[in-house]
Image (cartoon, rainbow, N blue to C red; front, side, top):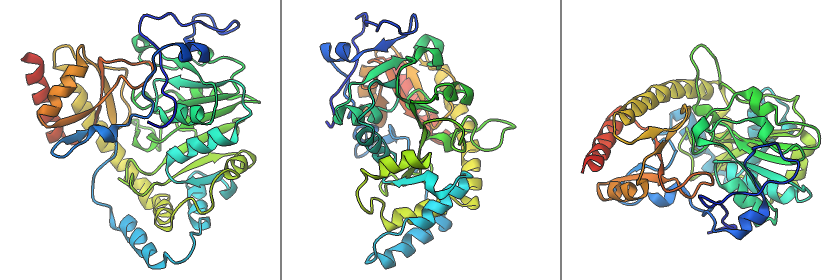
Length: 383
């Protein structure tokens, strides 16, 4: 697997640096090097196999709408020309009420993390807030950074307390909503992490899956904030629109900061079909459709949570807000194997720092799929 795996060991007391906030779970690099590690390179796609119902990958599977499929198909007629990113860049900027030079298009959100790790080699105290998507830390480690972790507490619903992040951390990475916990942190709490001299990276790959009654747009998103020093917002178009194979995402931030990242980016990093998709997904038709999908997802997620609550020993973590839920279940590792035997793929939780073998992540699907899944899970638990 790519990158150095990293993690903590249950029952091992983690040493804290002098001067860190009292009681904070700041895991320093020396401790990470001294103990067995998590597999940061493990992702949900490897859980899926032929004949399995996929609840392991958080990508929505639905036919592409004509307004998206059309531009992608049309772009194939001009593949002899080098990609022109400017129209897509302008469209994304307009969506978020920003200037084009505040947008950097990438080959998926994952490339953005690599650019950050490579371009910001001068940072002295990078901190990753966990549990979260492992690729940001993997990219930092592959670039030679000594990474520290702030591990959020399951007993507190994995909620963020900004005071737990070391004051002198000059690079902080956090997801919102967070994969795998599905927790949506208040925008004010995330914004409180921004300060001069620090780069704050907020992974909003799943922001378009969130919704709140009576609140328009994406609740708790910082994508339009231009007033926070050092803010970098990472976005993905692969989840809601089922474009994981196309690889398209983007970064939002101050022009001078994005210029540092662009300097380490290869030429023409985003293909013409991906650029066509980015432009289409930034338009008002796409945004309206995203809001409708997010509303339906909320209802489907509530249905999944209710069904899981009826099962013995199953506990849903926090207040899920995205396209997946995290569950705690004693013996989950063995249950995952039994589920595979019955035709269901779910995401193991033990490769996420801060979790362990008794955690599973389950993607939200339609109600019929949820009912079939929870019925099988119930039978396994009662056996």
